[in-house]
Image 1 (spheres, rainbow, N blue to C red):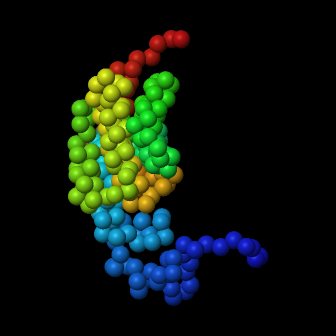
Image 2 (image 1 turned 30 degrees about the vertical axis):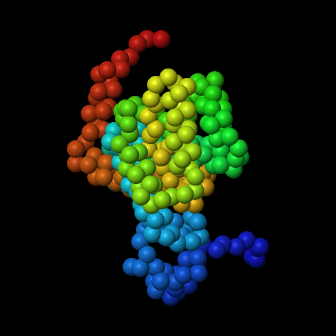
Length: 252
């Protein structure tokens, strides 16, 4: 059956695989690394060295953060379905959303809108923060339960932005937004890694609506280590026991 549908991503024949016009075996395998291919498949072009370095840094940033909902759920699933690693990995990444590790795109939308709108950026930041405070919602990319007053990952990411002289305007706007968050809160509020990543990923060409996909790629890779350790240590059973011990049943 013929249709008008087309794909420009890839196809294969008995002796060849083609990815966006490049021969996989001849042009890509052993010549392009995984992160280059991720950028290429997402944005239809290969990254320059600065873009490649930034994307690598952002993926490493979100790969691992200890005991989080994603790692705990992946471990619990691995304990229940030990022979299916992909099931445990999938369960872990499914909980990445607007609260944990998925706030990058929310902050990116704020920054993207601010630059597109132009005009008084101080006023824009003031309005954004006021709107979030009025609804008692944190500004995406700000606040952290552990890293206070500074998220150490942010120091490294913003230093990289300075070193590479990223000039899209997103990093300066993020710093303005951070100052306004602090001013209205009357105290310092942590700029977290997802906020810094929002600015850096915008700087290298990623639109907000696919940033969560990058977060999922990073965390999925990190979950492999948790699942391997779970098979050896069986921490999930201990978590289960702790829940039963500390969350007692009461008749309704």
